[in-house]
Length: 420
Picture 1: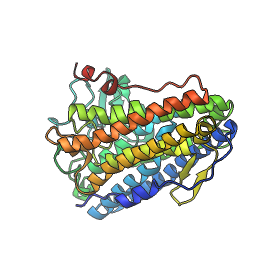
Picture 2 (picture 1 turned 120 degrees about the vertical axis):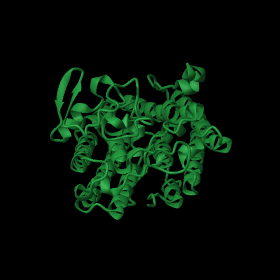
Picture 3 (picture 1 turned 45 degrees about the vertical axis):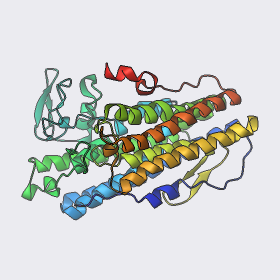
Picture 4 (picture 1 turned 135 degrees about the vertical axis):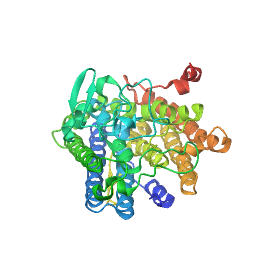
Protein backbone atom coordinates (compact mmCIF):
# COMPACT_ATOMS: atom_id res chain seq x y z
CA UNK A 1 0.00 0.00 0.00
CA UNK A 2 1.32 3.51 -0.66
CA UNK A 3 2.86 5.43 2.22
CA UNK A 4 1.23 8.83 2.76
CA UNK A 5 3.74 11.66 2.48
CA UNK A 6 3.86 15.42 2.73
CA UNK A 7 4.62 17.05 -0.57
CA UNK A 8 7.78 19.12 -0.83
CA UNK A 9 5.90 22.18 -2.07
CA UNK A 10 3.77 22.21 1.08
CA UNK A 11 6.82 21.87 3.29
CA UNK A 12 8.75 24.68 1.68
CA UNK A 13 5.70 26.93 1.56
CA UNK A 14 5.57 26.67 5.34
CA UNK A 15 9.14 27.92 5.51
CA UNK A 16 8.76 30.87 3.14
CA UNK A 17 10.34 34.00 4.63
CA UNK A 18 7.73 36.36 6.03
CA UNK A 19 7.71 40.05 5.14
CA UNK A 20 7.36 41.38 8.68
CA UNK A 21 8.16 44.83 9.99
CA UNK A 22 10.87 45.21 12.58
CA UNK A 23 9.66 45.56 16.15
CA UNK A 24 11.10 47.46 19.08
CA UNK A 25 13.73 45.50 20.99
CA UNK A 26 11.83 45.23 24.29
CA UNK A 27 12.90 42.10 26.21
CA UNK A 28 9.54 41.77 27.99
CA UNK A 29 7.65 41.93 24.70
CA UNK A 30 10.10 39.49 23.08
CA UNK A 31 9.61 36.79 25.71
CA UNK A 32 5.84 37.34 25.78
CA UNK A 33 5.72 36.70 22.02
CA UNK A 34 8.00 33.70 22.48
CA UNK A 35 5.50 32.27 24.97
CA UNK A 36 2.63 33.00 22.58
CA UNK A 37 4.40 31.04 19.83
CA UNK A 38 5.01 28.13 22.20
CA UNK A 39 1.35 28.10 23.20
CA UNK A 40 0.18 28.23 19.59
CA UNK A 41 2.51 25.40 18.51
CA UNK A 42 1.42 23.11 21.31
CA UNK A 43 -2.22 24.01 20.71
CA UNK A 44 -1.83 23.09 17.03
CA UNK A 45 -0.16 19.83 18.12
CA UNK A 46 -3.17 19.07 20.31
CA UNK A 47 -5.56 19.78 17.43
CA UNK A 48 -3.66 17.44 15.13
CA UNK A 49 -3.53 14.78 17.86
CA UNK A 50 -7.31 14.99 18.07
CA UNK A 51 -7.50 14.38 14.33
CA UNK A 52 -5.14 11.44 14.73
CA UNK A 53 -7.39 10.08 17.46
CA UNK A 54 -10.40 10.29 15.15
CA UNK A 55 -8.50 8.49 12.38
CA UNK A 56 -7.47 5.76 14.82
CA UNK A 57 -11.08 5.37 15.93
CA UNK A 58 -12.03 4.87 12.27
CA UNK A 59 -9.26 2.28 11.86
CA UNK A 60 -10.45 0.40 14.94
CA UNK A 61 -14.07 0.51 13.80
CA UNK A 62 -13.31 -0.78 10.29
CA UNK A 63 -9.76 -2.05 9.80
CA UNK A 64 -8.72 -1.75 6.15
CA UNK A 65 -5.88 -0.52 4.00
CA UNK A 66 -7.77 2.74 3.54
CA UNK A 67 -8.36 3.43 7.24
CA UNK A 68 -4.80 2.42 8.12
CA UNK A 69 -3.44 4.76 5.44
CA UNK A 70 -5.63 7.55 6.81
CA UNK A 71 -4.36 6.98 10.35
CA UNK A 72 -0.77 7.02 9.11
CA UNK A 73 -1.39 10.25 7.22
CA UNK A 74 -2.89 11.78 10.36
CA UNK A 75 0.20 10.77 12.35
CA UNK A 76 2.48 12.43 9.78
CA UNK A 77 0.35 15.58 9.85
CA UNK A 78 0.52 15.59 13.65
CA UNK A 79 4.30 15.78 13.49
CA UNK A 80 4.30 19.07 11.56
CA UNK A 81 3.36 21.41 14.43
CA UNK A 82 4.90 19.27 17.14
CA UNK A 83 8.39 19.24 15.65
CA UNK A 84 8.30 23.02 15.47
CA UNK A 85 7.92 23.05 19.27
CA UNK A 86 11.12 21.12 19.95
CA UNK A 87 13.02 24.41 20.04
CA UNK A 88 11.32 25.07 23.40
CA UNK A 89 13.31 22.20 24.91
CA UNK A 90 16.73 22.36 26.60
CA UNK A 91 16.16 25.70 28.31
CA UNK A 92 12.62 25.49 29.68
CA UNK A 93 12.31 23.21 32.75
CA UNK A 94 8.59 22.59 32.22
CA UNK A 95 9.19 21.32 28.69
CA UNK A 96 12.32 19.36 29.58
CA UNK A 97 10.49 17.52 32.38
CA UNK A 98 7.54 16.75 30.08
CA UNK A 99 8.99 16.08 26.63
CA UNK A 100 10.23 12.55 27.24
CA UNK A 101 6.66 11.32 27.64
CA UNK A 102 5.70 12.28 24.10
CA UNK A 103 8.78 12.17 21.86
CA UNK A 104 11.31 9.81 23.44
CA UNK A 105 13.46 7.84 20.98
CA UNK A 106 15.03 5.53 20.04
CA UNK A 107 12.85 2.77 21.44
CA UNK A 108 13.16 -0.96 21.88
CA UNK A 109 9.86 -1.70 20.18
CA UNK A 110 9.77 -5.31 21.36
CA UNK A 111 8.65 -3.98 24.72
CA UNK A 112 5.36 -3.13 23.03
CA UNK A 113 4.60 -5.75 20.34
CA UNK A 114 5.99 -8.54 18.22
CA UNK A 115 9.24 -7.96 16.35
CA UNK A 116 11.73 -9.89 14.30
CA UNK A 117 13.98 -11.06 17.16
CA UNK A 118 17.03 -10.94 14.90
CA UNK A 119 16.39 -7.31 14.03
CA UNK A 120 15.00 -5.75 17.18
CA UNK A 121 16.15 -7.49 20.35
CA UNK A 122 18.61 -5.55 22.51
CA UNK A 123 20.97 -7.71 24.57
CA UNK A 124 21.61 -4.77 26.89
CA UNK A 125 17.91 -4.34 27.72
CA UNK A 126 16.26 -7.33 29.42
CA UNK A 127 12.82 -5.92 28.56
CA UNK A 128 13.39 -5.39 24.85
CA UNK A 129 11.21 -8.41 23.98
CA UNK A 130 8.63 -8.27 26.80
CA UNK A 131 5.80 -7.76 24.25
CA UNK A 132 3.14 -6.20 26.44
CA UNK A 133 0.51 -6.78 23.76
CA UNK A 134 1.06 -10.55 23.80
CA UNK A 135 1.46 -10.92 27.56
CA UNK A 136 -1.22 -9.95 30.10
CA UNK A 137 1.36 -10.50 32.86
CA UNK A 138 5.14 -10.29 32.93
CA UNK A 139 7.93 -9.57 35.38
CA UNK A 140 9.93 -6.38 35.79
CA UNK A 141 12.79 -6.54 38.29
CA UNK A 142 11.19 -9.51 40.03
CA UNK A 143 7.77 -7.86 40.32
CA UNK A 144 4.79 -9.23 38.39
CA UNK A 145 3.06 -6.58 36.30
CA UNK A 146 -0.66 -7.04 35.67
CA UNK A 147 -1.26 -5.84 32.11
CA UNK A 148 -4.60 -7.58 31.70
CA UNK A 149 -6.20 -4.24 30.93
CA UNK A 150 -4.15 -1.91 28.74
CA UNK A 151 -4.81 1.62 29.95
CA UNK A 152 -3.03 4.98 29.78
CA UNK A 153 -2.03 4.51 33.42
CA UNK A 154 -0.40 1.16 32.61
CA UNK A 155 1.56 2.69 29.74
CA UNK A 156 2.74 5.55 31.95
CA UNK A 157 3.96 3.01 34.51
CA UNK A 158 5.94 1.13 31.85
CA UNK A 159 7.55 4.17 30.21
CA UNK A 160 11.33 4.04 30.64
CA UNK A 161 10.80 1.32 33.22
CA UNK A 162 13.75 0.24 35.32
CA UNK A 163 15.45 3.48 34.33
CA UNK A 164 16.16 2.26 30.79
CA UNK A 165 15.52 5.08 28.33
CA UNK A 166 14.92 2.69 25.41
CA UNK A 167 11.84 1.32 27.18
CA UNK A 168 9.58 3.81 25.44
CA UNK A 169 5.96 2.84 26.04
CA UNK A 170 4.22 6.14 25.25
CA UNK A 171 4.19 9.03 22.83
CA UNK A 172 4.43 9.64 19.11
CA UNK A 173 6.96 6.90 18.40
CA UNK A 174 5.05 4.18 20.24
CA UNK A 175 2.03 5.11 18.11
CA UNK A 176 4.22 5.24 15.01
CA UNK A 177 5.49 1.70 15.65
CA UNK A 178 1.96 0.41 16.12
CA UNK A 179 0.77 2.00 12.86
CA UNK A 180 3.74 0.96 10.70
CA UNK A 181 5.48 -1.92 12.45
CA UNK A 182 9.20 -2.54 12.16
CA UNK A 183 11.09 -1.25 9.17
CA UNK A 184 13.04 -4.38 8.18
CA UNK A 185 14.58 -2.84 5.06
CA UNK A 186 17.84 -1.58 6.54
CA UNK A 187 19.22 1.10 4.23
CA UNK A 188 17.14 -0.26 1.37
CA UNK A 189 13.85 1.23 0.18
CA UNK A 190 10.66 0.83 2.17
CA UNK A 191 9.19 1.67 5.57
CA UNK A 192 7.33 -0.52 8.05
CA UNK A 193 4.54 -2.57 6.49
CA UNK A 194 2.19 -3.65 9.26
CA UNK A 195 -1.03 -5.00 7.72
CA UNK A 196 -4.41 -3.54 8.63
CA UNK A 197 -5.45 -7.04 9.70
CA UNK A 198 -3.20 -6.61 12.77
CA UNK A 199 -6.03 -4.41 14.09
CA UNK A 200 -8.89 -6.71 13.06
CA UNK A 201 -9.96 -9.14 15.81
CA UNK A 202 -12.25 -10.91 13.32
CA UNK A 203 -9.41 -11.68 10.87
CA UNK A 204 -6.40 -11.21 13.09
CA UNK A 205 -2.80 -11.35 11.94
CA UNK A 206 0.08 -10.91 14.35
CA UNK A 207 -1.98 -12.25 17.23
CA UNK A 208 -3.67 -10.36 20.09
CA UNK A 209 -5.44 -7.87 17.83
CA UNK A 210 -7.82 -6.80 20.58
CA UNK A 211 -4.90 -5.92 22.83
CA UNK A 212 -3.07 -4.15 20.00
CA UNK A 213 -6.15 -2.01 19.44
CA UNK A 214 -6.33 -1.30 23.18
CA UNK A 215 -2.65 -0.28 23.28
CA UNK A 216 -3.00 2.01 20.26
CA UNK A 217 -6.06 3.69 21.74
CA UNK A 218 -4.51 4.07 25.20
CA UNK A 219 -1.31 5.56 23.76
CA UNK A 220 -3.28 8.06 21.71
CA UNK A 221 -5.49 9.07 24.63
CA UNK A 222 -2.38 9.56 26.75
CA UNK A 223 -0.71 11.67 24.05
CA UNK A 224 -3.74 13.96 24.00
CA UNK A 225 -3.75 14.27 27.80
CA UNK A 226 -0.04 15.09 27.82
CA UNK A 227 -0.50 17.73 25.11
CA UNK A 228 -3.38 19.26 27.07
CA UNK A 229 -1.01 19.63 30.01
CA UNK A 230 1.64 21.45 28.00
CA UNK A 231 -0.92 23.72 26.31
CA UNK A 232 -2.08 24.76 29.78
CA UNK A 233 1.51 25.30 30.89
CA UNK A 234 2.00 27.92 28.16
CA UNK A 235 -1.41 29.56 28.56
CA UNK A 236 -2.16 32.50 30.81
CA UNK A 237 -1.14 31.60 34.34
CA UNK A 238 0.78 28.49 33.24
CA UNK A 239 4.18 27.60 34.61
CA UNK A 240 5.97 27.56 31.25
CA UNK A 241 4.82 31.08 30.46
CA UNK A 242 5.63 32.28 33.97
CA UNK A 243 9.15 30.85 33.79
CA UNK A 244 10.08 32.84 30.68
CA UNK A 245 8.22 36.08 31.41
CA UNK A 246 9.01 36.64 35.10
CA UNK A 247 12.55 37.74 34.21
CA UNK A 248 12.80 38.72 30.51
CA UNK A 249 16.60 38.39 30.48
CA UNK A 250 16.34 34.84 31.79
CA UNK A 251 13.53 34.17 29.33
CA UNK A 252 15.87 35.12 26.48
CA UNK A 253 18.54 32.83 27.95
CA UNK A 254 16.01 29.98 27.75
CA UNK A 255 15.11 30.88 24.17
CA UNK A 256 18.71 31.04 22.93
CA UNK A 257 19.57 27.85 24.83
CA UNK A 258 16.78 26.02 23.03
CA UNK A 259 17.80 27.38 19.64
CA UNK A 260 21.46 26.52 20.04
CA UNK A 261 21.03 23.13 21.67
CA UNK A 262 18.48 21.88 19.14
CA UNK A 263 20.58 23.23 16.28
CA UNK A 264 23.89 21.77 17.43
CA UNK A 265 23.90 18.91 19.90
CA UNK A 266 20.49 17.43 19.23
CA UNK A 267 19.68 17.85 15.53
CA UNK A 268 23.10 18.23 13.89
CA UNK A 269 24.71 15.83 16.34
CA UNK A 270 22.57 13.10 17.88
CA UNK A 271 19.92 12.93 15.17
CA UNK A 272 22.03 13.42 12.07
CA UNK A 273 25.83 13.16 12.41
CA UNK A 274 25.65 9.99 14.50
CA UNK A 275 23.74 8.23 11.73
CA UNK A 276 26.25 9.35 9.12
CA UNK A 277 29.14 8.11 11.22
CA UNK A 278 27.57 4.72 11.90
CA UNK A 279 25.70 4.35 8.58
CA UNK A 280 22.93 2.97 10.78
CA UNK A 281 19.29 3.14 9.61
CA UNK A 282 18.19 2.87 13.24
CA UNK A 283 19.65 6.34 13.79
CA UNK A 284 16.68 8.10 12.25
CA UNK A 285 14.08 9.89 14.28
CA UNK A 286 10.94 8.48 12.63
CA UNK A 287 12.41 5.08 11.84
CA UNK A 288 9.18 3.11 11.30
CA UNK A 289 7.41 5.55 8.99
CA UNK A 290 10.42 6.91 7.07
CA UNK A 291 9.19 10.39 7.96
CA UNK A 292 12.53 11.56 9.37
CA UNK A 293 13.12 14.04 6.56
CA UNK A 294 10.00 15.98 7.55
CA UNK A 295 10.69 15.85 11.28
CA UNK A 296 14.21 17.25 10.78
CA UNK A 297 12.88 19.93 8.44
CA UNK A 298 10.31 21.15 10.94
CA UNK A 299 12.87 21.13 13.74
CA UNK A 300 14.94 23.50 11.61
CA UNK A 301 11.91 25.64 10.85
CA UNK A 302 11.07 25.81 14.55
CA UNK A 303 14.49 27.29 15.30
CA UNK A 304 13.88 29.94 12.65
CA UNK A 305 10.40 30.64 14.07
CA UNK A 306 11.80 31.49 17.48
CA UNK A 307 14.51 33.76 16.09
CA UNK A 308 12.14 35.69 13.83
CA UNK A 309 9.30 35.72 16.37
CA UNK A 310 6.85 34.35 13.83
CA UNK A 311 4.91 31.07 13.61
CA UNK A 312 2.41 30.07 10.91
CA UNK A 313 -0.41 28.08 12.48
CA UNK A 314 -2.08 25.08 10.88
CA UNK A 315 -5.09 27.25 10.00
CA UNK A 316 -2.82 29.69 8.12
CA UNK A 317 -2.96 32.46 10.72
CA UNK A 318 0.31 33.92 11.94
CA UNK A 319 1.47 34.55 15.49
CA UNK A 320 4.20 37.18 15.40
CA UNK A 321 5.71 40.00 17.37
CA UNK A 322 8.95 41.33 18.87
CA UNK A 323 11.71 38.80 18.42
CA UNK A 324 15.22 37.72 19.29
CA UNK A 325 16.15 38.98 15.82
CA UNK A 326 15.04 42.47 16.90
CA UNK A 327 17.18 42.22 20.02
CA UNK A 328 20.26 41.19 18.04
CA UNK A 329 19.63 43.82 15.36
CA UNK A 330 19.51 46.55 17.99
CA UNK A 331 23.09 45.64 18.94
CA UNK A 332 24.54 44.43 15.63
CA UNK A 333 22.40 44.68 12.50
CA UNK A 334 24.89 42.79 10.36
CA UNK A 335 25.03 39.85 12.74
CA UNK A 336 21.22 39.77 12.94
CA UNK A 337 21.01 39.59 9.16
CA UNK A 338 23.77 37.00 8.94
CA UNK A 339 22.07 34.74 11.46
CA UNK A 340 18.79 34.98 9.55
CA UNK A 341 20.68 34.08 6.38
CA UNK A 342 22.18 31.09 8.20
CA UNK A 343 18.75 29.95 9.34
CA UNK A 344 17.38 30.28 5.81
CA UNK A 345 20.33 28.22 4.56
CA UNK A 346 19.79 25.42 7.09
CA UNK A 347 16.08 25.24 6.31
CA UNK A 348 16.96 25.07 2.61
CA UNK A 349 19.55 22.33 3.25
CA UNK A 350 17.01 20.33 5.24
CA UNK A 351 14.64 20.95 2.33
CA UNK A 352 17.17 19.16 0.14
CA UNK A 353 16.79 16.08 2.34
CA UNK A 354 13.02 16.43 1.98
CA UNK A 355 13.39 16.65 -1.81
CA UNK A 356 15.34 13.40 -1.77
CA UNK A 357 12.61 11.65 0.19
CA UNK A 358 9.85 12.99 -2.02
CA UNK A 359 11.81 11.79 -5.07
CA UNK A 360 11.95 8.28 -3.61
CA UNK A 361 15.14 8.05 -1.53
CA UNK A 362 14.27 8.00 2.16
CA UNK A 363 16.45 9.34 4.96
CA UNK A 364 17.62 5.88 6.09
CA UNK A 365 18.81 5.18 2.55
CA UNK A 366 20.87 8.37 2.61
CA UNK A 367 22.78 6.97 5.60
CA UNK A 368 23.95 3.84 3.77
CA UNK A 369 27.68 3.11 3.65
CA UNK A 370 27.46 2.66 -0.11
CA UNK A 371 25.71 5.98 -0.70
CA UNK A 372 28.36 8.75 -0.58
CA UNK A 373 26.04 11.18 -2.36
CA UNK A 374 23.33 10.57 0.24
CA UNK A 375 25.83 10.92 3.09
CA UNK A 376 26.98 14.21 1.59
CA UNK A 377 23.40 15.52 1.35
CA UNK A 378 22.86 14.90 5.05
CA UNK A 379 26.30 16.33 5.86
CA UNK A 380 25.42 19.54 4.01
CA UNK A 381 22.48 20.04 6.36
CA UNK A 382 24.66 19.19 9.37
CA UNK A 383 27.25 21.77 8.29
CA UNK A 384 24.54 24.41 7.91
CA UNK A 385 23.20 23.70 11.41
CA UNK A 386 26.68 23.79 12.93
CA UNK A 387 27.45 27.03 11.10
CA UNK A 388 24.33 28.79 12.33
CA UNK A 389 25.12 27.72 15.89
CA UNK A 390 28.34 29.74 15.77
CA UNK A 391 26.31 32.84 14.95
CA UNK A 392 23.76 31.98 17.64
CA UNK A 393 26.68 32.06 20.10
CA UNK A 394 27.80 35.42 18.72
CA UNK A 395 24.24 36.73 19.04
CA UNK A 396 24.16 35.71 22.70
CA UNK A 397 27.34 37.69 23.26
CA UNK A 398 26.18 40.88 21.56
CA UNK A 399 22.87 40.84 23.41
CA UNK A 400 24.84 40.47 26.64
CA UNK A 401 23.29 37.32 28.07
CA UNK A 402 24.92 35.08 30.66
CA UNK A 403 23.98 31.47 31.33
CA UNK A 404 23.22 30.19 27.83
CA UNK A 405 24.42 26.59 27.69
CA UNK A 406 24.41 24.95 24.28
CA UNK A 407 24.41 21.16 24.43
CA UNK A 408 27.14 19.29 22.60
CA UNK A 409 27.36 15.85 21.03
CA UNK A 410 30.20 13.34 20.87
CA UNK A 411 29.37 12.78 17.22
CA UNK A 412 30.45 16.38 16.55
CA UNK A 413 32.87 17.11 19.38
CA UNK A 414 34.66 13.74 19.74
CA UNK A 415 33.61 11.52 16.83
CA UNK A 416 36.21 8.85 17.63
CA UNK A 417 34.44 8.28 20.96
CA UNK A 418 31.39 7.07 19.04
CA UNK A 419 33.30 3.95 18.00
CA UNK A 420 34.78 3.16 21.42
